[in-house]
Length: 83
Image (cartoon, rainbow, N blue to C red; front, side):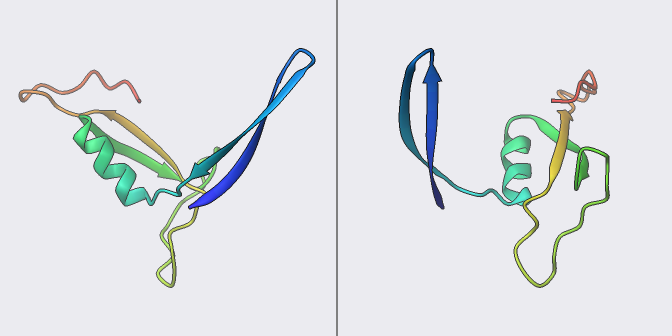
């Protein structure tokens, strides 16, 4: 869990809000995607498509990009659109 202070600028008005963020492990994200009817298509380390792998000695890297698509419904394939 981490705290961040976000600044919002609207014209000449500036306000700030505090937000609590929680890092998400790829396995947790995969489970939520599966529960939402999605399947993992690809996992990358960066936007250039670099290969990603979990660190066996510690938490999984925070630099991960996961691409999901609609899973099969009633035996019919999803439309293939990445989510």
